[in-house]
Length: 394
Image 1 (cartoon, rainbow, N blue to C red):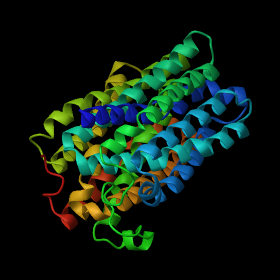
Image 2: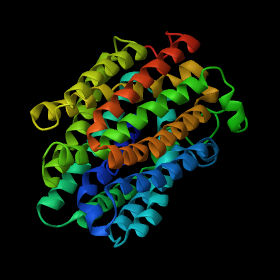
Image 3: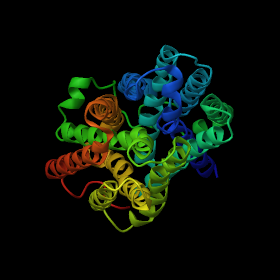
């Protein structure tokens, strides 16, 4: 009974991880004019969030060994709730930058810690379904923001609504801490996948295959974050949609991810993680091709198809980590993979913002296709280095 209740808590935690992730992209067309800054400056806020997340991810192994996954989760969601409230009361661009720091710090450790816990204790189908719950949160975010904008409440109230939801989840997570203890997770090295002292970054990087895994996460999260951050602006500035329509339609990408992870969770019962990733890359390529026609329904379908393609990649890569590298190293390696992913988030979406400002936002689908192709190449290199049997369905 306790293990099922704990799984429910983990599901809610993944929803809370997704809720804020798509807000900036949905709200930015309405925000940048109010602050009097160029449209490309969304990349600066995204970069600060990502840098803070990298710092937090690199400490995940040490923090998880000391505090345990349950406490890390509750503390991190509380930090995110505070940061979102800070966004809602910001009246200048520099205030957004200040609140971006706790926003990112709250995301890194919990993401790495929860992913490692699930990879160690649950089958690949559960990893996909749990990341489907992330998609539920990421899909709800733009719709809540769109509701606030359509109802003339403003983007400030959109952020505040999400902050209140995060506060409620924090209270629930704090009340559920005994479930982690009864489930055996007291922050011990054995329960959280570690054995001995925390590994140094040099030790982790020198494990065979880790560099390829880091590159795969870099490319994937760069792709996903670029699509989420700039999709709404692309539809507005290049496709002719109004900012309010674009804020709602931006959620289609995350709906595709959510629905895709629900389906891929079933498919992982029969297919290896590697095959699921290849199918995702093919679907993503078709979706990006549709985005070359931004003015109509084909582009909206492309957002859904791109989301479907992204759906299996992240959870299947994550679930394979203990199989590729061993349970005693998985927490440290997942933390480094997460850091690499957020370096991609930090660098690539802002870089596209500069490209969009100087060369035009019409290059959005070209940029996405380059990232997708790079991800496919490094994934194949990872398979050659670590073997295709890792991450198979259970």
